[in-house]
Image (cartoon, rainbow, N blue to C red; front, side, top):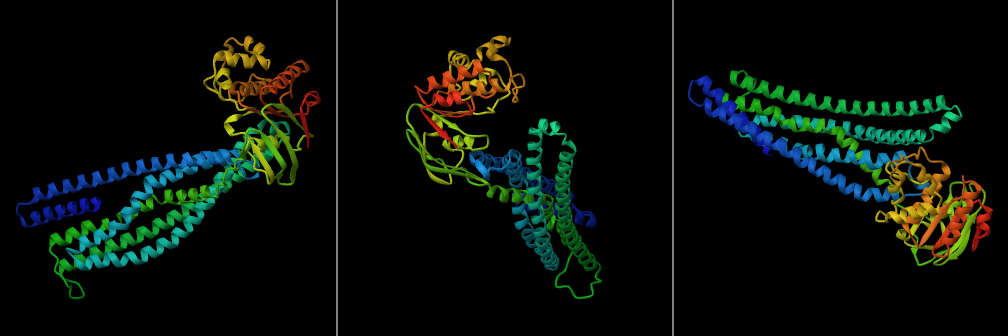
Length: 497
């Protein structure tokens, strides 16, 4: 509203200055002052709209990510999106919603009220000019509705293609050594090129729809201004082919001519931000389709499985039943691909069983030592403290010694302060597994889940880890997925899959 008021003040000042010049009377200074005032009002209005829109978008993004990130991190099993798709959903899609709130929503409100206010202000000087502006709005709205429907479908397809491309790139980069080993670079390059071409084609479709919308807008904007200009000019010359219902002087005619382009200006701004609307709505639709996270199993003071079945596409694990109290060692055995890791994930609450009854300890009481532990690009000590940042240096060093990392640490000049990257470039596979196990020990949780802790280890190191797990089982509950028959022979219970 303040933007239209500023435009009206500017137009009235320009018209007053022109009339004063033509009639040779004082008033040009007052007209110039009104023009400056109108310009300042418009500047303040535009700046305020941008600031408020930016703040609203930032607040929306913060709120959306606060609710979305736990959902994305809690999705597991067949319903879980690929890693690249998860990143796109959590970062790019939320950014698209933020851009819509920051750029499109403020101008949408102005585009709703602005033309109506302009027509009312123009009608104070010329009812015919106001009628011309209003009549050109009707076919314009119809054209924009048709163009907007096509643009919305194109934006949905573009968002889906971008998500698929992100998932493809992340997956292929993660498995680049395997791709190179099997000399599949050419095939993977063709696959990536095809996905990129798909994104390009769908982006062109979005831009085509945007250009169509802009063409419709510009046509009717030019038409309305031209009709108003013809009416005002012919009225001043007295050559209209009909008797006008009003008399226009120079001030009124020039005021109407200056203000006429403002009728479509809010919609021009809306069209400029329409791409953000399309992407924002497509992102909102995609985020609404994010599956709910896995339901946490019943919380108990012990692990209890009763005829638990975990279904994966083309594979079924179970039924499985066992119980484990406050301490003891359970080994889950079976051939590769039988579902040992999936069963541990179900006990950890990361995979929801399709059938049966499962009760386990709360999430904060479970420590996980996986086959490929997460590594952060920081120091070795920081990675060991990940499960319990307040652990003392002595506790960290003790856990590292228990799993046999003390010799490795002693060889490094920086000791526990040695930097590592997220790949653990200078660590062997067995050392990474032992780092994950040491981190679980530092976390000091009531339930320890370990996935193949003795794999990739020499016989002496494996014996050390087996003795450690047996000792830990006297203090806490330990469930291990393993192929190691020596470890299974010492377990209190063996679950064969």
